[in-house]
Image 1 (cartoon, helix red, strand yellow):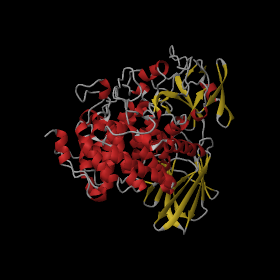
Image 2 (cartoon, rainbow, N blue to C red; image 1 turned 30 degrees about the vertical axis):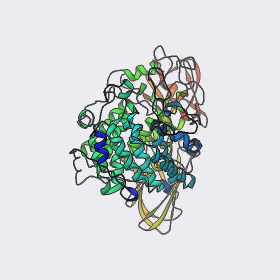
Image 3 (cartoon, rainbow, N blue to C red; image 1 turned 135 degrees about the vertical axis):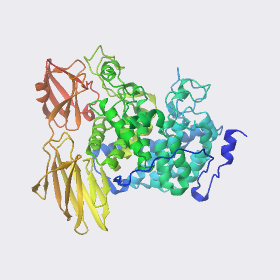
Image 4 (cartoon, rainbow, N blue to C red; image 1 turned 30 degrees about the horizontal axis):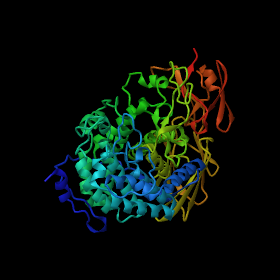
Length: 625
């Protein structure tokens, strides 16, 4: 009996309507219990508890919803059916998503990752349903899962160079389908997926790009088995005692020896690793703490985040050419002239915003919210829309004229531009809908007797506080404006704490309650207002924004970005920009989202990433003298 037959024989595919696969497993390592005095993580709000009113955020949601709802069922199921040798009618959408049995990474593009984004898209549709209540989205989720359950086969994983990646995303999609869209068949479909995927998974975390399996070309070494634990921990907690095999599998795939163990000890082992997937792996470390109780993994994630921040650009992005850098190597600076592939934006922002959400919930430190906000406004909010033909924004470009010889842009000249990827339906077409849907759960967090306000997007939060119906409406044009207004509605007077994140750059922040000034004391990045709240109580928060400059790193103090509030101001120029510190700090705002700065070569316009449009820009400038 071969390994596949043995594993298949140990599985009971369905136990009731939400059956659980029970597979033979080796004795697995256990995570260490958390300290008894560990702080309980803040609660995530539910998608449906928030009404988002921010026009640019809503526009991104409508874009990805329209594209995903416009793809036919047959097109989405085609690679699964083809790889199983079944009839596959419909239109082949092509790109990375299609199945190409003769694929060769050295000259082919189409067929790189067949079906890989299916799980992303089902997850995003379920989250969008939870946020909007649109029954068409729920019907689509249930319909796609049913067809997938009929089509998926062992061949899908055997013939796929990314079996772990695909399994991870399918776990996420089915988990979200049951939890958020009420698909009562999702657990049974997951059980079957689990059973047929196991023989084609390595059984442990295999680092990128180590050879596995044997006898394959280099493209088969790019799978990401070390990211599996995050969703496996989450589904195990969601299923309770029935989720034990997924919990054991999560522990089996923790990349401890070469990654989490040294990170927990403060050893920087990021250099040379694939950027997005290893930052995403830090989310697995967070779940090993939040669900598994391992303090070691919390230390690893916190240290890893600090090491990542030390090599990040002013935008919050990281990983030029999809590679994390060694400390002191000078390669981040060199990338400003060498490459236009500076930050894998939808994928990277999805991993970053998950990680900072987990860290904020567990540590209650506002600096993680500062980082989330920086990435949101300077990266994902400025991407080009997802197109129905699979054109996708992939890389943010921080190439800066005058910092070295400069790499010629594909569109001609030097400097940077916002452009679509040459690949259709790449991985970023999967993560973009997910990160957009998660705007709904990133703004607020809950604690017994407390509401934590993290992002200042126009929105309404509704919840129950000790049996009292509560509503908190946030009105603002932030970050264009420094003013934020919060109004409370309560079915009866109720005491709770309102925790407001005060960004580190907002020196001199002030607040008024019902028109009266209050003393602001900020602890770990949050100011607390405790009182008995009544309907129509109003808090007015002012977050002063001033121009400031941030050096790329300590080794290059003359290479700087100009910041205003949480946003980078990009110089709209295709030639080197040099100015004095005084000139940079004296830039004048000449429109809602446009500034003008004097430089050694005259006036230069500047704009945040969301307003760059199709103009050439430079992220970093040189300080004169």
